[in-house]
Structures are given as structure tokens and as C-alpha cells.
Length: 317
Image 1 (tube, helix red, strand yellow):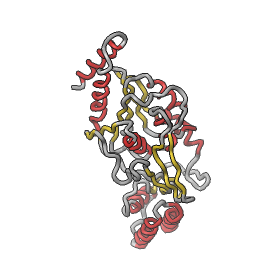
Image 2 (spheres, one colour):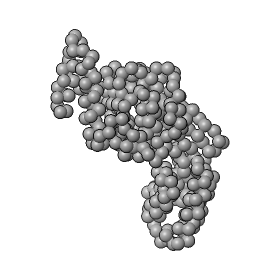
Image 3 (cartoon, one colour):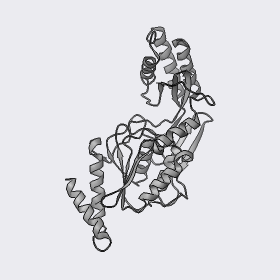
Image 4 (cartoon, one colour):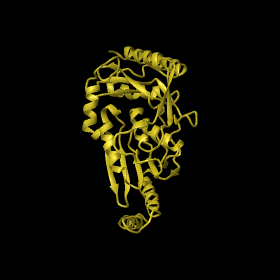
């Protein structure tokens, strides 16, 4: 397929699906002008993807708008460049997106996630992780390297941190002109961490999309403090469509609408409650968690935990 046919296919997907139709029309005009100017001529697939992505993001900076190059040939299922079984196998090889779930010294829980796979794929793994951490005195959720994922997984995770069901996000979809509400679940498998113990969410510039949903929603609910740097700024959920053997285009068909603010983090990112360099986010949040632990007593069964917390807090400086 030559570059003209590829650009026309990208333009068609934009016109049919992009959540902002007026921007889709501007992008169509711009991409065709760039094509006529010969900007894409002679580029290999990878360079072509880079050039088109830069142009797609030039109008409104939407980081979910991308033309992506893939080394392996792309499948196509129901119009999308997506194979559910391959995605499931990917999740298994990536420990279902959970990089770490452990008790830190001082009885502080630590959960590091890299991607939010849907509950149908990763629900058991997430339930196991949260059950493991349920009896810790404070919780750090590290999404500094989390690039996003399924909003239903975000709903499941937040469900472990609240009491009664709560409406934490909505997503407007252009297709069908509908708005879907996202609520926490009244029941979760395993044991809840609960609504009362403190939570800190570690963020950075690589925190994106669904991971920003988690950070922003917990922040606006008043359930957690965010610690670190401003996040990537992608609030428009997307689908991916095959353009050629090794190329697909990701097009946002919706936008998040927070029930508290009435808006989202698109283009601006989630602003941290406690702003520190991303490399310092863990130590900062851990120190706050340890300070909390030391308010819970240091006699009887809590003596060992308090001793751990004091020693570790001193080592953090």
C-alpha cells in the first residue's frame, strides 16, 4: 500500500471515530496537505509512523492519536488490530501488569503496576495482590511506569480502597452518543484494604491514560494523595485500527468526565498533591507512610512494627 492509500485510511478512521469531529476534519486537511508536499514520500514503515504521529498530534496534542509501527504482522479482529488471545498471552508473560506486591518494612504495602489488563484477564492476580496487602497499615501504589489500560481494572482496584460503591469516572463515547458511568463494585474477591487507611499514589511523566484515571479519581475522591511529577496527560480512551501489514492507527473515540470536576486531565496531566522529582517519589511517600505507622502505637504486637518503622525512617534521612 502506498503512502496515499495509507493516509486516506487514517483520515477515514479519524472522520468515522475521533471523539472531536471538528479536529478530525482539521487533521484530514492537514495530513492531505502534507502528503501533497511529499513529506511522507520514500519513508520506510517505521519512519512513516513517526512522521504521521507527529502530524496527528500537531493540532490538539492528543497523545492517544498515533500511527504505530509493529515488527510482527498485525491481525485484524472485528475491524481492530487486536487479537484477544494474543493479548491474554501477553498479560501472562507480564505477570498481568503487576510488577510488585509486597510488604515493606514497617508494615507498609507496596503495589507497582505497569499496565491495567481487564478483570477478565487479570482480575484474579489483582485480587491476590490486594488480599496480600489488605492488612498493611498504609499503601503505596506505584504507577510511575504504568501506561494505562482497561477502565474496568481501575474500577476493580479502587473498589478495594473504598466502602460503599462510588461513582468515580464517566466516559463519553462518540459512537452512539452515550456516556457510561464507572462505579466501584459492592463486592470484590479476597479482602479489602478498606476506606480508612492512608494511600499514596506515585506518579510521573510516564504515568498515562488508565493509570492517570486511577491517580486523578483517587485524588478527586479524597481517597489518596499523589506524590511525584505531573503525568502524561492522556484522558481520551482509544481503539486501534489496522492500516497496513505492520501499521495501525490509534483513534480516541471517547473522553473522560470526572463527576467531581466535570473535566479530566487531557493535555495537562494529573497535578501531584506533593510535587517532587519522579526519582524521589518513593522515598517521599514511604517516609509519610512510616510516619503514619508510628502514630499507631509501639507496645505489644505493634512493638516490632514500630521498631521497623523507626529504623527505616531514619535510613531515609
